Amino acid sequence: MRFTQTSEGKNVFLSVDSRVTRKNPFYKAWKAKSFTDGDITLHFAIFDILYDPETKMTLTELIEEIDQRLSSSMAFDESTLRKKLKEYAEEGIIRMEKDGRKVLYSRVPDTDITALHDVIDFFSEVAPCGVIGSFLQDRQPKHPELFSFKHHYITQAMDSDVMDTLFEAIHGHRYITVDNLGKHSNEVRTVRLVPLKLYISAQNGRQNLLAFHEKANRLNSYRLDYMSNIRIEDEICEKFDALRGALSKAEAHMWGVNCKWNIKHTEHVEFEIKIEDDEQFIVRRLEREKRCGCVEKIDDNHYRYVAEVFDTTEMLPWIRTFISRITRMSFSNRTAENKFKADILEMCHMYGLDGGAAQ
Image (cartoon, rainbow, N blue to C red):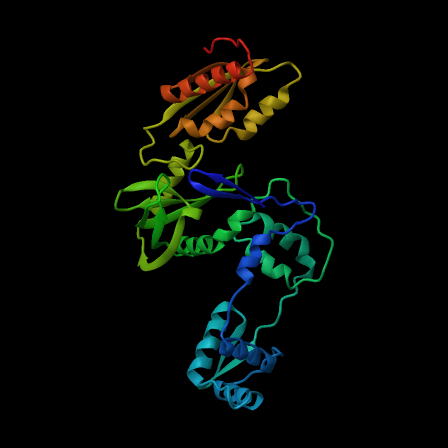
């Protein structure tokens, strides 16, 4: 870990050697939790009594058994125990069964996951809310670990609670109210949204929410690390399916996360590249990474890439990777095209190159 001081404050850099540390260290933050003496005592008392899934007891029987096992200074009433058992039933670790007028409580049998250790190892490091896999790893015996990652975006673990809440809202087609930090300011605003889809960048690991801002009547993207205090509302969005359909149409013109309602307001991007006879791997890469664009063959050594996108500037970092092969380019967004060409000229000056005139 190292620090640098800038005009905006202190920046923290964390470096993890994947050859030494194969598991996301930030997951430990979700496993550090404080409990009251009563909470932790009641937890272990319940599962000490219901240690066998075949053991079934009523609320009254549990109270009596707990009282016998604990000292007189620690006592729990039926209301407290009932709430705790209901909470555990919702979590799926306690089973509630009706037996006439009585309710019987028992422990849910453990599921054998020892054969899934490779699946869980992979899930915990690459999947959204991978912290779930990390909790499952804690229950497994030690085993050889197969996976290590060159590009491992570990900081997204800190937003696992935000992502979990958003998944719940999307699944239920619910409105949410969220405190959002502005992208270009430190001002926090409270907004009401309909969450539609989550995007995770394969380039930098950044997580974004695509949501409908009803007041502004816009599709917007929101960074998860800028969001806090998310509240799921009871109201269901009746037009959720229609909004998801509109987003699907917009995705045909999205390179990144910038989107618009009107798919007619797009920007044309076109460039041509030249390859040698033995460089078909460049064409394969172009096909693999084209996203919403298309690749056209001009002749055996020249290919054209064409796309209609909402935001050309999102594409510039990718287009720069073809700089030495681009022979012609044409953007309807002249500002973006001029910036691209100016960057090339600046690079030529930096390295003392004459460079050819951009077409």
